[in-house]
Image (cartoon, rainbow, N blue to C red; front, side, top):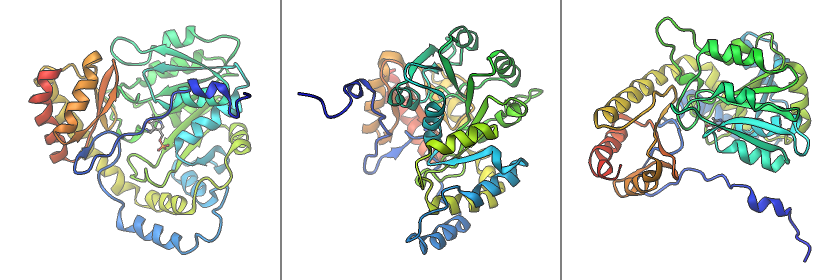
Length: 356
Ligand code: PMP
């Protein structure tokens, strides 16, 4: 029988989101534990009154607010239905069948999926032994068919972060016709080491026409449920993205909530200090308990438990904590409220320690 759907879809890995279990603490999806600020909630309620109308397909007001905040022209910014949709758009605008997309692996699960769906060939380059990007190997993987490179910084799920200098050298070495997407979903949790500059993709994209920066309102801005992210790029890339954009996919509640969140950016970004402090506390406690924990610049930490990861994650559910398992590789723990983190640490230093 002739298949009704593309046979190759069977081999595409499905995205598996973090589980929800009643009464368990969810530290599996790198979300913010705090709900929206009153001003953001008000904006959502106000927008709810006009959902009989389609949203602004160009997210004009939101893009204007971002342009003002980032001090750049609006034609360098695109909004998307979460930054994951922007990853998809980038593959679509750069790749024909069989063109290649390089990314470090293990990294964000969506990269192989968006490549496969678009008919592009994924070229995963193994992480370094200390769980970061192997930039040298990524450069060596470039071929005549390479069209796009994803650099996830900080890297999900390992938390590793590239320094400004090494990233700059990498960008200089990539041929100008290859688009480099700097996926900075966790940018707001990065803190520079004393005496070092932050690897801020938007600053690095200045004057580099092939560099695209992806950021999101899902993490530090706490709007994961509304689905809104943005890209900063050369206007030529922004126009190309608009051609493949799913019409009206950034809904009106998301647009208004994002604008209100930018209005409260000071307060929202101040919250990240608490998360960063908890991240360091959790990492410190894990190190003290004998775990190997790479430094993280995101709102999660990575335990490279290898084959023990699945059992460690499964037993955590019995202790009331949902973590993210990467079978055979490791477990990712999102940073929650202090009491949630304590619950995790009680498990990790007790029953979990026996397993790991
Ligand atoms: N990039 C990375 C590295 C991520 O971890 C995520 C979310 N897990 C995203 C992009 C997508 O985020 P969103 O679609 O919610 O903006």
